[in-house]
Length: 270
Image 1 (cartoon, rainbow, N blue to C red):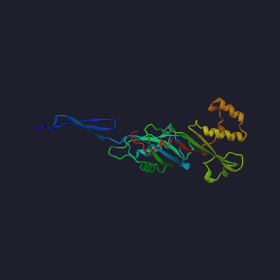
Image 2: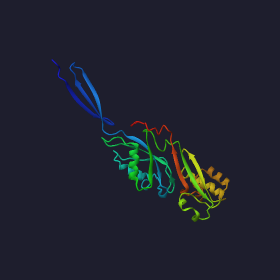
Image 3: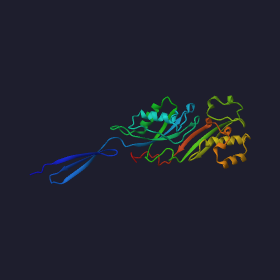
């Protein structure tokens, strides 16, 4: 006489899904089981975004989010994509108000609702840009990255450019389309200079201090010996405030990462 087949069903929650165990009794009285996975929701995915800000409407990326800045607008835009939980952007480089970003970067961890397909690069770029309007921020690209990636700490280097317009005796001599995009200190012939600075990281207002010191020495307001003394003091408060270059001429040109970090073949959850 054939044995009656019987089974019981066990279900319990796991971190990222629901595991169902089917336990049944076959004719030979041996127990067998198999496991099925039913995802509760997409595994949390990490993305890095490259973005720029329009020089005509630059906003500071302050860590004090009671102030309206780039990070606020990015986080507000991503919430319109209906993630499972609130999303926080981590920006690679924070800039003062008035500093321009030709290409900055930020990363986020995002998890989609159950039953929804995983986000794709083009979908994220298009969706964020649509919800960022009319703010002067534009997402340039997106890359899937590993969960250990961090936009700030994984950066290999950052490149800044400072633009000087030398030779103007009055602010009115600056071309209209260059106003707020350069610094025009008095002295020298009428020509543009671009100073490039590249390092893994920079101190607060370091580039503006270096440019201001160079110009002050050229104008005779500071001596090379005084610069040496200031460096030896290692006190940022000792630097003459009137010798600091204004933010209008400073541009964050790029943030560099290793190609391995931007490998688009990273699997979800890695």
